[in-house]
Length: 269
Image (cartoon, rainbow, N blue to C red; front, top):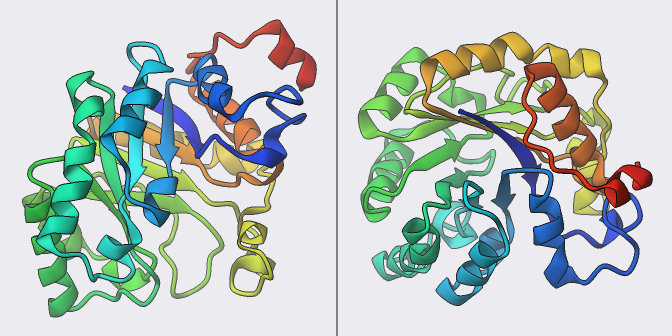
């Protein structure tokens, strides 16, 4: 199954460009779930999730909707997490697991996380600490792009996150690889000028894809559909709701329509 959505949904600058002006933050998820059947939660990178908060989110979406969650920064960037930290994170996921609304966990590592024996050992421990919860790893350094790495990830039952992003020599190229029954793709945008040098974090993801650029991914996504049982695709070019446009274009290109978009939403386009 192919699911297409956005990385995050609760952005103030989406009011007027996607959400109606004045919408309550507590109503955003239900509104979003009227059009998309999956979302990637990024706030869990900055603060640990709680079972109470995730249960509340699960209540605001229909059956068949799934969440993916980014691993906390202590687990990926700082790598200071203890077994207790992992246990706390995993325990909070129970409401989503109980309702069949948990897709997987995204563990995004920084560019400084190169392929090495030490980092492979950390990923092995990471997988064990996740207690069988499906996990996908997003690498930012090209040293991880190797057939032997993909085979190792498959043996370890860790998914590989495919990405579309600026093509710097050190970054992951736009390849389509599935190492588990879950394939995962993130569209970060191609704003090369702001990728390394920016004043605000959102500037890196300020990018509007053309349909021709997105069409490059159609055969790649079709390949992933053949390799995996579930394919998650998330648009992360979130500034001014550009990711909504990206997700909609991808749905059209792939012939996927999960939309129950309301007339109010259509009038905002």
